[in-house]
Image 1 (cartoon, rainbow, N blue to C red):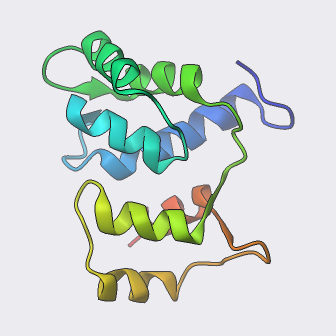
Image 2: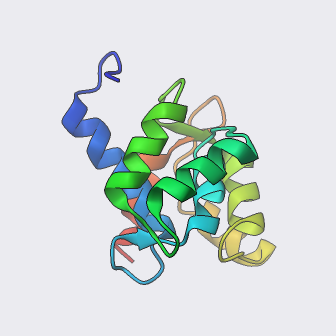
Length: 131
């Protein structure tokens, strides 16, 4: 699927950066149980059946980046590249390795929020990965 204004290569780079947030071991894999959280963190709303099917495709132990991209391409409807500050706060305090409200407050001080209350998550991911 090609998105208007975004080359396929740029799209793959953005997927990879998002994937790396959930790749806690740095080995280009995520556990299947994290797949749903990852997709929801990126503003998608997959059903549990869709997540289960994607996890089956990925295998019993881990999902690779390429498998994540394939699954995400199926579910990605908008591909705006933005997440609301509220959604980001929810993700950081509720999914994966949960941060405390204080930790999120500190992190949010360094994040650029646009006039609509949105954060370009590609920039956010770059920021996190560089620290």
